Amino acid sequence: MAFELIKKVRLCEVGLRDGLQNEKKILTADEKMELLDGVQAAGFPVIEVGSFVGPRAVPQMADTDQLFMRMKKRDGVEYRALVANVKGVERAEACGCKKIKLNVSASVSHNLANLNCTPAQSVARFGECVDRAGAAGIEVSGSISMAFGSPWDEEIPIGNVQEIVEAYLNAGITEISLSDASGMAYPSQVYDICLKMKENYPQVNWWLHFHNTRGLGIANILTAMQLGFAQFDTSFAGTGGCPFVPGAAGNVATEDVLHMCEEMGIETGIDLDCAMEVGHRAESLLGHPASSCVLKAGKAKDILLMKPEGQTIK
Ligand code: ZN
Image (cartoon, rainbow, N blue to C red):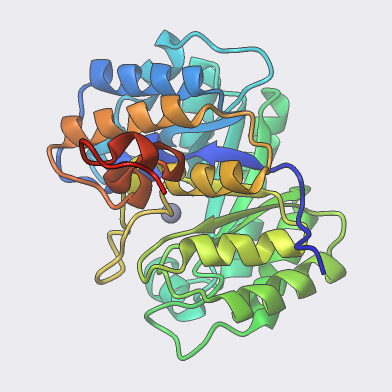
C-alpha cells in the first residue's frame, strides 16, 4: 500500500515572535529586520512578525510596531501579530498590521489563577477586540494554548477545548490554532484530538502549533497531516521556549519541517536553502546553537558532497 499524504502545506514562520520572545538576548530592530527580510526571501506564505503586548512584560517584542512600519510587504503574504487586548488592536491598526491572533490557555486552573475567569469567559471578553479589529479592517484569529496538556492540570479534557472553540466561533472567529506550548502532545493523542475537532467543527480553518520540548514536534505534525491538517507554525532554528513552563523548548524547527516536506515531495513554496541561511543567521545573532537537526547535520541530499577525500561511492 502506498504511503499517502496531503500534497501541500502552509507554514507560518513564528521565529520572530515565539522564538525571539523567549530568548534572553534582545535583538535590535535592525537585526530583526535582517531576519524578517530573509524569511520573506525564503517565500513563507504566513509570517508572525511579533506581538502587541506590554513592553515591560515582554521587552523582546517592544518594537513590533516599528517592524511593521519598516518592512516591505509582499503581495499574497500574510503578516500577523499576537494581541492580548484592545490596546494591542489599536497598536496593530496604527502600524498597518492586518491580521491579529488572540490567545487563551485551555488550562482552567491557569486561567482562574491569572485572570480570575474560565478560558471560555476570557474568549467572550475578546468581543471588544474583535469589534475594534473589524472596524479597522483587521482579520482576527484565535489560538488555544495548552490544548494538549498543561503542567497545572492532570489532563485537559477535550470538552474544555471544545468549549473554547465554541466561544471563538460565537465571537465570529473561525481561524483557530491548537497550540502545544508545554510540549506535552504526542502523536496518538494528536490524532484523536484533531480528528474530533475536524469532525465536530468542519467550518474551522485550523492551524497547529507544536513545541519540540520532548522531540515529538515533527511526529505530531506528520500525524496531523495524515488527517488532512495543512497549516503549521514553525520557528527558525527551533528558537524559543515558554516562560511559564519548566524546561520548555521552542517550536519545531522550520528547517526540519521543510526538509521533511522536501524529501516527501510535499509542496511548501518555501526555499529550504534560504530558510537554512536564516536559521544560521538567527543562531549567530542569538549567540548560541539552536535545536534544529537539519541546521546541525545539513540536508540529507548534501551528504554526498561531504564524503571524505579519495573515497568512492559504492
Ligand atoms: Zn509557542
